Length: 64
Image (cartoon, rainbow, N blue to C red; front, side):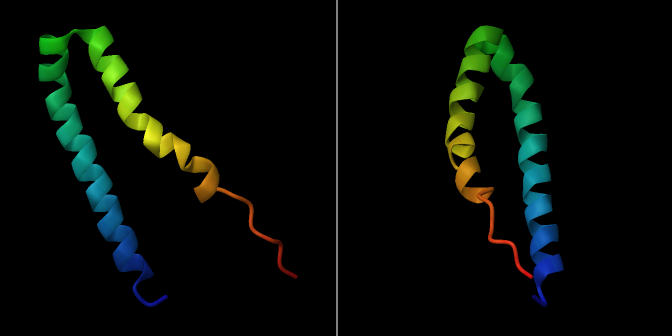
């Protein structure tokens, strides 16, 4: 409703912040863990988000 733009801006800022922080950490983590282990870790960390995609994107009933 009335605060949709504010919520969108806030969530967009959070996503940008997490992307920036993870990018800054990635170089150090790869140097410490090795690329294969870092890839496996980030893959496993992404699984919960991928698991909810079907719930979030389920089709809604057509109106009209």
